[in-house]
Length: 268
Length: 309
Image 1 (cartoon, rainbow over the protein chains, first blue to last red):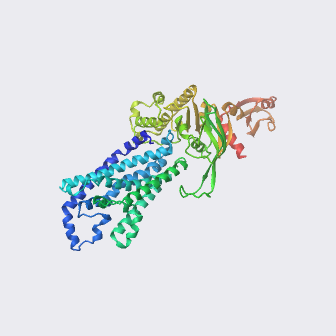
Image 2: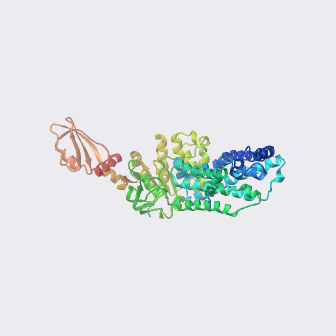
Image 3: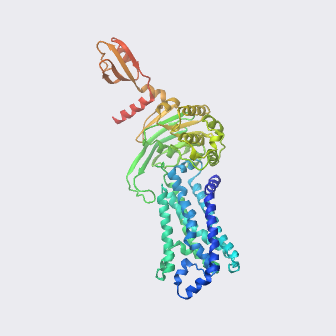
């Protein structure tokens, strides 16, 4: 199924980076309930007085007037996105293209490892990284809520679904990153293509959330299918999970078809 | 059964942007053209050609990195397209200008690559000893290694699991003369153990020293494939002749070419049987005669000159 030595090596090479990102996400996850607990009422007052436009405070489907809203904001906020992208974009786009460019991929592939197994191993590794980062973000949120004494406002039952929703979103991005990585001989085009998808997707979602006339473009964004607040308030839409799973599956199928068929010339 | 055999192996590269945007109608360039190679088991086989001749492309097809455009190949009896993983299980590969994971120590890198090979590194200790890679050296990070050290690690990683076939691309590049000699000893040892070595090199003296047979490739086409003594026998030797009085007429003598009269001496190149040449100078008063031994380099240059003509 996967190559264990390669999987272990991948983890070993990424462990420090993973620890730093997870720490960052725990801190960020911790901060959002604190902001809600400390400033939520004041922000609500500003909103009710019309000092802040309603769309602005409901940025990306989150808000700071409820704990689920604050947790949701933590998920969709650029800080969380950047930290998660270290693995969903940075690691995945480098995983094959960068090794190709450096020449280390041919040292790995000169061993009895098929390209399918190489891909599956890197895919599995990226999924475990994203599982860890999403867990860190949620753990930070629960810790922050507990610290502020508002843990009772956060239902724990939907957390596994929220975790799955987050992993599927960043997993879909990671799959696109890996597909780009195996399509190019150099790192820069793979990174550029994946970053382009993420930035455009994020822009469409944020634009739709800030400007009601742009709402019809939101379904074209991957981030539209990350619905932390809906999940935490018990309004789970299976279609959100299905769309993300479909994007992920299409990227995986592309990779499994293209990678074994493409040539790997000597690095230039 | 040959260790390596190719029949009409061909690789065309299409010019243009990388996948997935490449047009099927983009212009194609032949990197390897209808190559028929045969490497016997247990021999050291040299694969020669200048940069861009198609050596690395051929090697990459043998290992499954590139897909042939036409023709077929078998390595250790296994098909290079369908059974590539099984081939790599039984081979060791040293890429030209090998890239390594700089953040690992030499020892950790070799351990990792041995685990990836799924075979124990039974030859590592001996190889490290021969190449003077001490335990202390192996505990340093690869990023601190010199070019020669990296090449030594490359050689060890290719051979540490005792593969049946070693495919080595420019193996002595970056090694100092002493380490080159140690490397040749390793090749001799491999040969004695019945292993097959297929290696490409620019260093013709090295090929002459270690190879049983060689293939010469030019612009993707095979121009020669034979054993080294036969190749040397056909090579043109440099001749310098000093005589007293009139110079003998050598222009029409069989095997003589590149004849030049420098006044005090004649120079020419001599191919094959020297007896017609010796007969032609028999009546002259020879003051000095030098016939340099044939070198693979001369044979190599001759092949290229002939093909160019």
